Length: 306
Image 1 (spheres, rainbow, N blue to C red):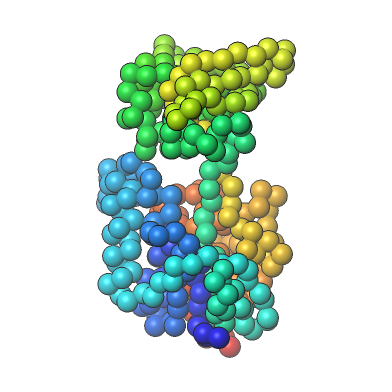
Image 2 (tube, rainbow, N blue to C red; image 1 turned 180 degrees about the horizontal axis):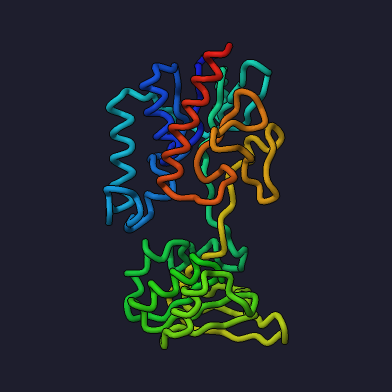
């Protein structure tokens, strides 16, 4: 059994930031990533305008820089998925899908969150062929075409506005009558001539052979059904934390995010959390990177007390 001071699970901005700080602290660590590339969600982000000093940076390019920084310091990476985490008090065992086990004094969960799916018929089959969860990533593919955005929060409204400048027509489909996004965004959406707001409608099926061709809708107040021909469906109904590995080990909030303060300590000694999987008010690249640094500071402090 391999032994480490620290196992970091996840290699998005939070995980990579933590890895850099842990390496500088000379902790014996390993970063476990289940994907073939680092960066998390920002890999598919077309443009990042709110990371200080890197205005307009492409998300993929920024993720490459993050990884290069970690590589330059000699951070060790392991490509595998974690099957489970076992808490044995002063030590934790991280069991990998390949059967290997790593014993660690501390575990940092930096697994992020993922987009919620509609669970509509055809959604999974047509993802990447007209079904998208990132308007800024894929909007350009639908220039002068008709698309739909599903959702009613800030992201859905921002997506609808962004797409309205590219696409011929945009349908904003929401299962309620009231939008949840900021009032200023609501006003902008309602003022746009090529955005059609469709309250009380739900997507029951996304249609198409090899690409999206139409959506089937149901009006949840009257039961009325209708079909709209279009080329793309952008789903923006929220995020789900990837916290299942610690579900029975630490406290979570009602939405499944791991409860932890700004020090990134969870309710279980030796288990820490950073990034979008942590319960907090703002989930951005800058807060994920900050979490990674703070988590390592907490780990160092806790190690010093032992």
